[in-house]
Image 1 (cartoon, rainbow, N blue to C red):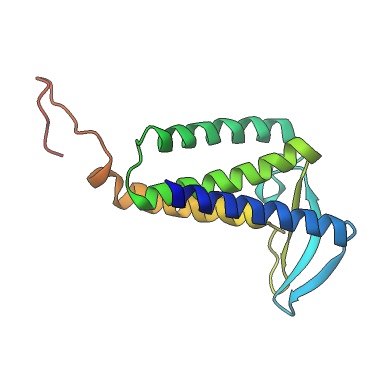
Image 2 (image 1 turned 180 degrees about the vertical axis):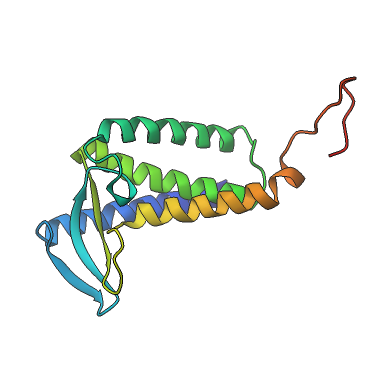
Amino acid sequence: MILYTAVFLVLLAADQILKYWITQNLALYESMPLIPGLVELKYIQNTGGGWSILSDYTWLLSLLTSIILVVVLILLIKGIIRHPLGRWGCVLLLAGGLGNLIDRFRLGYVVDMFNFQFMDFPVFNIADICVVCGMALAAVYYLFFYDKYDAKPRRDAHGDPSDR
């Protein structure tokens, strides 16, 4: 658990430090090149979720995020998810969810900064990257590893373990 906690803290700190740096060094909607022609840093304030869904419903996103974070934390603490792929997915979800939740509670919006210059895509942040990667890992875990490692055996009508 020490490694999971350390990675969680590093990702959360990186997210918050970069968001602070952006707000201190760029004006709202100002941008600067990060990898010229590919990615720029652009200061955006997002009151919604991904693709600005539920804009101006920060309270609802905060509530939903809080509930999801508590459930994911319980899954980890109670050892319900034991496979490393599932645990890493949870760690990334916790780091990303908490990173954006801190912004919502502290600022009333989420600070976004990575903007692809070569395609039309929403501006995003480190926490968003963590959430997307965490969901991808969680999906792979659930589809390919959950039944083998973490699912409880099913019982037939007589209470005996059944074959799947």
